[in-house]
Each structure stands twice: as C-alpha cells, then as structure tokens.
Amino acid sequence: MNTPKLLILVTCTSLLTAALTVGVYHTLVQPEQIIYEAARGKAIQAAEREINLSPRFKQLYTSTTPTNFISAANDSREAVVFIRSLTKLEGGNALNRDLSSSTGSGVVISRDGYIVTNHHVIEGADIVEVTLNNNKEYIAKVVGSDTQTDMAVLKIEADQMPYMLFGNSDSLQVGEWVLAVGNPFRLQSTVTAGIVSAKGRNIDVFEDRSGIESFIQTDAAVNPGNSGGALINTKGELIGINTAIMTSSGQYEGFSFAVPSNLARKVVTDLMEYGAVQRGWMGVEISSVTNQLAEERRLPSVAGVYITIVNRGSAAHDAGLTGGDVILSVDDVNTNTLSQFMEQIGRHRPGDKINVSYVRNGFIENTEVTLKNKLNSTDFVAVRKDKVLIDLGFELRDLSSSELSKNTTDGVMVVSVYQNSIVGKANVEPGYIITKINNIEVTDVRKLVEYLTNHTGEIMLEGYYENYPGLFPYMFRNDG
Image (cartoon, rainbow, N blue to C red):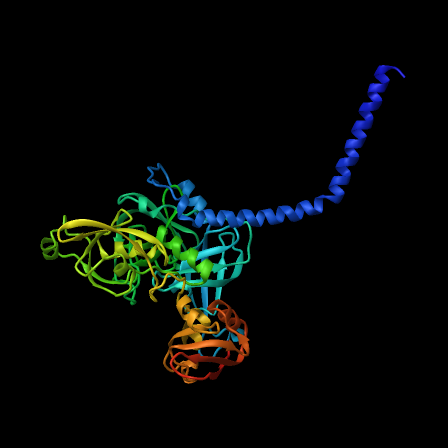
C-alpha cells in the first residue's frame, strides 16, 4: 500500500473513531450533564441573590445625567409586580368569595422569585396574589415582614425572573432625577418621574416609637397602589421602596416618600435568612439637638443626637458613653437628626461594631460600640409576628444563649399575648416558655410557626414559667 492511500485510511479511521466517541459521550454522559447544569443554575441564582443583597458590592457614586429615561423605565417595568391581598371577612370564606381586597406593588429582587413590598400592602392577608408584567399570576408565600420599617418579603415559585439590582441610596443627591414604578389605581406598570427633594425625612407615619423613618422624599407622582413599588435612579437601580405620601386629600400632592435601599437591603436579608429582623441596639434614650443645647454643649453646629439616658449593661454603656454626650456621626456618616441616626443603627445586627463620634465637655471623642439586642446580648434573637401568630393572639421569640444555659430544654418565649385573643382566652401569659406542641418538641420559633401554619384543629402547648415550679399545659383550637 502506498503512502497516500495509507494516509487516507488513517484519516478515515480517525474520523470514524471520533464520531463514535462523541455519540457514546452524548448517549451516556449527557443526562448527568443536564443534572449538573440544573444544579449549577441554582447555584448561580443563589450567588446572584447574594451579590444583589450584599452591601459589599454597592457602588460609591451613582449620580447620573440622562437625556431620557427610556432604558431605565423599560428594564424596571419587567421587575415590578402587581399585588392583590385578599382577607376573609368575618363569618365568610374563600369559597363563597366573602373576601375584602387591597392592592399594591412589589419589586422582584432575585431570579428565583423573591419579592420585596411594604408590610401594609400584605398586612392581615389570607391570600396574596402576584401578577407579573406579562400577566402571569402566582400565589405568593409571605416570607416575613417588619412593622418598624414597613417592609415585607414574598416568594413565588418561579424561575428565570427579571429582577432589579439594589443601588446605593447613600450616594443619592438632592436634585437628582428618580423614577417611581408601580400600579397606582390598578394601572399596571406605571412610570412617573421626579427629583430627590430631600433625604432623611421623618413624617411620623409609624405609630411605634421604635419605627425607623429616614425616608427619601421625591416629587415623583405616587398614589394608592404605588406602595411597595420601586424608586429607581436613571441607571435603573433600585434606590428605594415607595411607601407613603403626605396629603390632605388622600391623593398625590407633590410629596412622596421611600425607604432607602441600603436600609431595605438589610431588612430584606434578615427576613429571608431568619424570618424576622435582627436589629442592633445601643441601649440609649435620645432627643434632638436644639439651638440652646448646642450653645450649652459647645457644639460645632445645631446638629446631632443628644443622649439623655444610657441603660446599664447596654452596648453604649460598655463603650463608655454617658448621658449628656452628643453623637455627631456613625461610621463617618453624619447623624444630624434622629432619623438619620436611627437609619444608620437600623442597618446593623447585634454583634456588629460601629465607630461613633461624639462631643463631651466641648471636645470631640471617638469610641467603638459593639451593638447588642434588646436582651443586652449579641445573639440573633427577634420577636416573630407572623400572621398565624397574630391570628392566634401572641408574639414569640427564640431563647437567648444565657436563657438556654439556665434551662435543661430548648423552647421559645411568649413575649406578649393579645387581649381577648384565642391564646389569651386559653390563659397563656407572657413569659411562658413553650417546649412542646402536640407532643412535638419545640426548638425554635421558625419551626413552631411552620407547624401552626400547616396544622389546624386542637393545639396542646406544654411548657413552664421560670419563676413557677412544674409544667403548664394549655389547649386551644387553630381553625386557620
């Protein structure tokens, strides 16, 4: 056989071998590859969600000077959803449509269907319906909500969702263009434009004194139905959650307010991870700085937060702060007003360290404060106010590490009991530590909430009070 024929034979043999190899690979290996790609896709979604929620990735400067808002509006409309909250009327049920409804907006913040909205949009709802911009409808699960910031997180079973990236609300400038995206008067995916009118606004919209009000004020048109929708910059980044308006007529009059994205990001992350907000506390009582106080304390300006009382054993007490000190900044961010101070503290969890600049005896001092929780520990312990708990009439929290060290069993603490509620009529009192529910051991509030959500009928609680000997059983019905 001559050389050219040999070369042709070798080439044909090589091609045939390669084809057989590829065929065998696709036959035997491809199913595993598909499984791998699916797992890889979920991992990518989780990583994207982590990047979007992490403050480590926020930009320092996002101020923009657009010629139009077309790109930002088009991108954001896909990620803003319509929310309808349905509540059973007393004596009615969903089958005979005895329901009341309210509407609002929400913002998709991850590819796998997490949605942020306002607490007041879904408050008391038995069913939460979500409609996407493409008119697909879903029933949403309430992951958690927080009354002190009026924030809530929902989850729908969807994949490959268009979602919005968090921007850096600290970099917003007064006078900067912003867009409000939502569903006012059920007008789906409405976009309005305005400017940032002010930052750090407190409008006394929360009844709870511990509520955090440090709103972004804009003159973008916001009306009923916009609540929970997006406030975006001209790059299409989420820099606020539209929450309230100031009005005498009940409709838009030029003043709208949004929760800053940097605060919202922290609250959302806590709700997704723990079902409740892990809020850091300094353990101080504070008031505003007046002109007279500024002169008495030899302050550089009429600005800051005046400490009236420092609680013993608190984070502030441990850091050496005392009554009479005036806090000027937290982590180099000026805290000229109470609302600005509350926002800065509200971004942190127990155990976080912050740098506080303050004035004492006319001199500016600095100290590091390790924040604690309301129990004066650095544990992640928060009061749960899930709908099922509210319907039954009590609020719960996990036990702290010090409480667990004193007890021989796990359990959860009853923080408060509502008067004339189902639990109240069963004679459960605050301070009761629940160790079992229907003979199932209770280790944390999350699992107890899941059980109560999925179980109706007779409920038997077993537990004890720290200052009273013996076990105390209580019975009531959970009719859902």
